[in-house]
Length: 563
Ligand code: 9MR
Ligand code: ZN
Figure 1: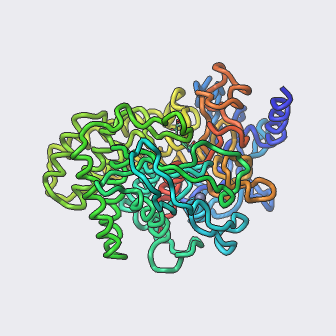
Figure 2: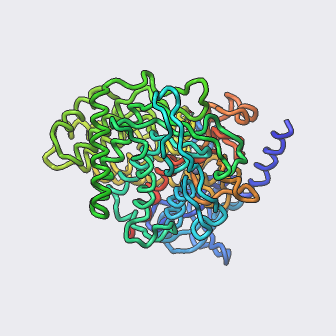
Figure 3: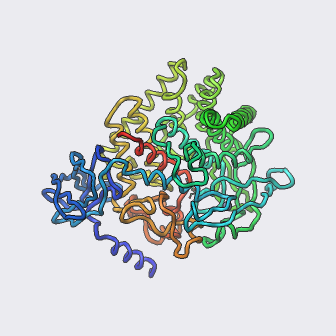
């Protein structure tokens, strides 16, 4: 009860600008510029922050009564026509003032750098130095050889150091690691101009290879070690059970355990390795070839094991209690894998596998995430497969994709704050689900040359950075109000438990899957409010590599020059 009172107090203290929701980082000069209010008023003023001078004023409209996700009645204004670079706030008599924000070109350049840099901060098996990691310096962690779990039926130890810590825990999971790589590589292929920075401040910066690819390579090298001789991938390597939140990475001396090979992990790896084989060719031929050979071996493993192994997806045996990333259905991963194999090897047999896999799956499921990846495969095939590809297949996939985009456009037009999540979609990692929807819509905006798609998609960054019912930017260090008590063990490295900037948190989770959420909320809580900025809320306030992967994809896109 005491905890509850304290948290309420924190929420109240923070609510100086609780009546006006804006993108607290800011808006690109040419972009749409929405603002939301909780009280009706005639008009709003856009005011220069330093001088207090009104530079623009606009009308306020009621747009949404009893929005299902928030229960709020929401009013909207828009200042799109105003493009002058500067720092501003918005105010109205009844709503008070908003958080301050910028309007300028490249307003998300820092967001791109830092959101990508978080992957360096998550690196395992390497000493992080103050030059690059600031307060997050630590000696190399988790470098001891890992033990095979008895289910693997192999003896001895295996050297599998490297890669990124998955999330707030120190586990490393192939499904999620490969998926994160794959999402970022797809974004890089579609919008290469946005991802060229070679100066984000990692050890490989200024080596004339985009830092995105350097960072991805760090994960790829680890994943290559996780591939067995028969081509299959060990599902994960983790400590047996999650340990204290205060355990620093290098102080975790427990031997980590390697779990059985799974087809889901192998399919996800196939996707990433096939992409890497193409993309790294221009920078490092031997490495690209290594990825190519690994992709082929992984693919053969999948051909030899056409059923989902283990049946029903990976589950922990009794003695292991870390994350599962168990996928009930690996057909969508196999589908995307076939697409990437086809694009890399250009062999018709892979295209036949795409067609066969496409028939078995829902191409556009209700959730796009690590266990539902088909839409990325669709985008990759339709946009990037060679011209001579199967026209019927292309047409079929395009049609489904466009239907999805139409559905998303309707959501944008009807949901409060223009979010693509419906009430009911606020699951674990909800914000990333929103960005995934948005990214597929964004790419659709180019495929179908439809401007409204792009606008609705870009709008999601406003939602993530503060234009939402909580008036909160969900990215650490960005905006006036953002999460400060995230669930991530690396916070134990700082004296005040603070976190590096650029991490996207999981976000509101209406399934209340941790004890703190259960204590604070119940089934009557509006879905979008099932969130708490506490390190104990792993189900709403953790960070995770795949959530940041789609943030990097977005920020890179928005960071393209000349827009
Ligand atoms: O992101 C995962 C989410 O979709 C699941 O519902 C949840 C519970 O199984 O697990 C999430 O992934 C966690 C992983 O299992 C372990 N590392 C932290 C991940 C983020 O919370
Ligand atoms: Zn580590």
